[in-house]
Length: 199
Image 1 (tube, rainbow, N blue to C red):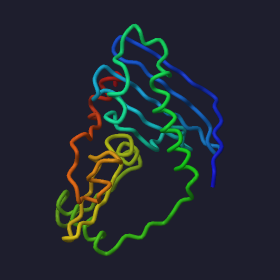
Image 2: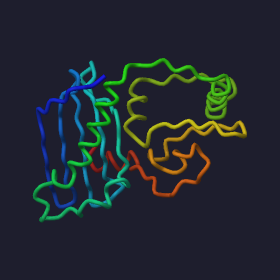
Image 3: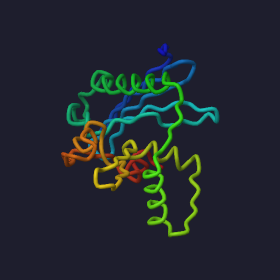
Image 4: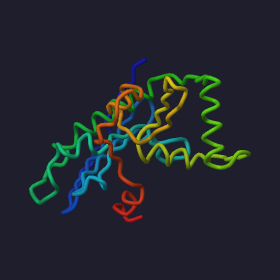
């Protein structure tokens, strides 16, 4: 299945500490925006693709770790007069990923009894042996928006790793846990993101 992308809006902005590029497009009848903000500090930079949901709020679809692009973009300053020139490759990559996600039909996932047991253990060790915990939609959206994507790795020894710490091309993820992280995985702390946006 393919998705047609229609381009309705593009904005850029600069300040002494940061510059940004935002593209808002229509993909398969859904409004999607990609926003990339390059701050003076890597931990206050972000790149995210979001879709406008039925409640007219933005839901995260994909994110790019700043460590994947921050070092390849210039430091904010008065000579940055066209942020799109430097950030458009990141926004384009995010929009292509969003189009792929929206074009993929929903699937039903069946988990193995072993993985079901690991989720039970995660609940029990986090909240108690007889725990019950409800995750609200806002918490799900928050989790999608902050940190990396969730990866679940089942190891040969029977252990299971649940992680949002690694970027997609980290050796730990691509090897399914057989190799160590290259220590180049970084996602901004939520408090830093909120502080940077004056929340």
